[in-house]
Image (cartoon, rainbow over all chains, first blue to last red; front, side, top):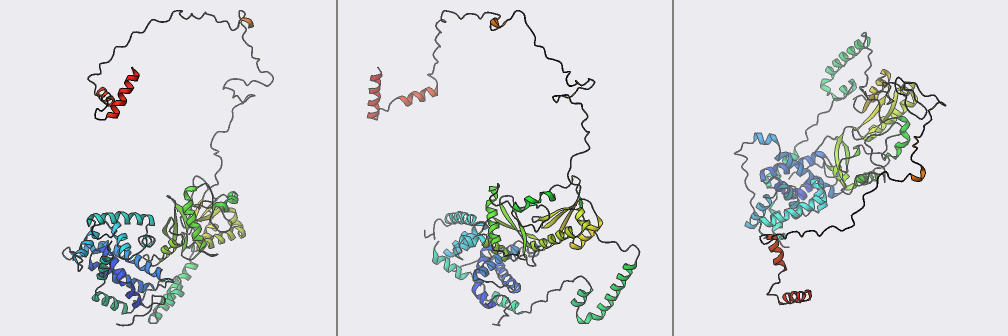
Length: 169
Length: 378
């Protein structure tokens, strides 16, 4: 692989940044858009934006927060784009379902996708990215109290959808 | 949730190799040259143009110079650009220089001197307890600024719902939320919202200082400039003039070439309404108004009030009533007829009430106690 020019990073090479955060960005994009084609686009857009911004972060937490926030914004831009809605034929918009290896994984994924986005994203960031309520609040630009409320309600809805399965507590 | 399940799912939520390769390919491409913005003036034109266009630019500069010379010598071309202004029909309210003594308690720095200040944050410990959270967030934010405000800071104000709205100077990348995250971190995720602004607070403060100097050094400006202050909510300075003086407006136009950093209001200072008829009524001693068509009562010739005198009522018999009060009857009223008892046999309420009083035979204690009570009653 070619060595990428170090433009953004502040002491961390671009490739290292991608290696470190690609799963986080892609996972969040997948959770928000619900299909791999859009997640692929978001993934590329986020790291291109990061590369072109030339940002230097004093702390790694700031870089992580910036990438998460940009991912959310790019998802909104791609999913909510009127240009995309008008130009992509309906036949091509048939979304290929995200498939996991195990059936129970697919069951959990389907249950999560059935939740409203307000609940789905905090749950994803909490369980899959292991962010705190404070961090989720920053990523989603909402108050920590609202995050806790959404986590509580989302978890309850998820529990009902899964009929109580896969919950350790 | 089941942690192993989550970890297994997370491991599968990764971008494909083709996507990563496509990203790497895009990143390896040379960065497209960003277009350079045109700057004002011929010097800017020359510096921005490439070498191949130098000859063309020289020609263009020559044409521009010719046009400028023509414009200079053209009759009537000496018109000076004036700053725009708004005429306030209701007079100037606020911004009265006499009131400036109370300004420093408003909470925010408005620059030295000048006038009052709109959209101010509440005074610390003031009488606006609703805004305490936002004011606290503001104090936390200020703690992170040094002597000068950063270039990205456009000001702050408290909007409805106790929300501190921080103005961020417009950037080229609207998707960049680093500053928002930074401010949220500094304010401990207080009640903070964000909005964009064109001018930084530092720029507005610089303008304020220039206006202060103007009022001190220029007698014409001092005469017409009534008051001025930074309105952080509108991201501009509001300046009130007593008259739309061309000299002042031309100076303001130089200070604010884009005509949107200083909002100029022109109007007379608020005063008593002189359109009302002056008071022309004659007032008698004691404040009473003389009715129309009657002569006023002169002092010393007031009529003496005479009390009415009744011959047949003297002091000894003053409290005797003119008619005797009728005596109360000596006998007590007759026995009141008893009210006929209401037939409650058909009433559901009665049944419920009575049934609740009947003891349950299956409960011996209850029944016994009821019987005992009944016997006592008998």
